[in-house]
Image 1: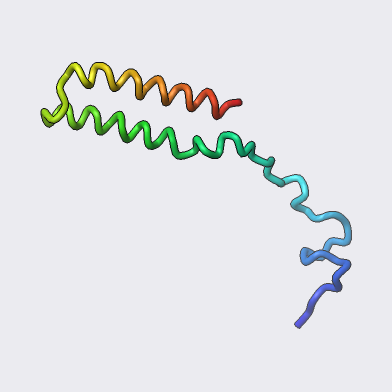
Image 2 (image 1 turned 120 degrees about the vertical axis):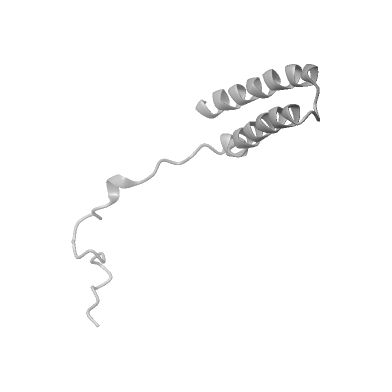
Length: 82
């Protein structure tokens, strides 16, 4: 088996690693709690319209719920930008 000495990287170059400029920036952990919130809100929005179309929810309830859900989606997306 042909192995490089510990001072030489596995790619065979003696200098810096060739992938040093491809590092990913660190994510801000404050928005990590919101990562799943937008998909959940979109599912709730779709479920609201589905329940209205089946007659389970009345039109006045849907008229109140869907703008609230849409507003929450917008607020979460604004928070993700920060």
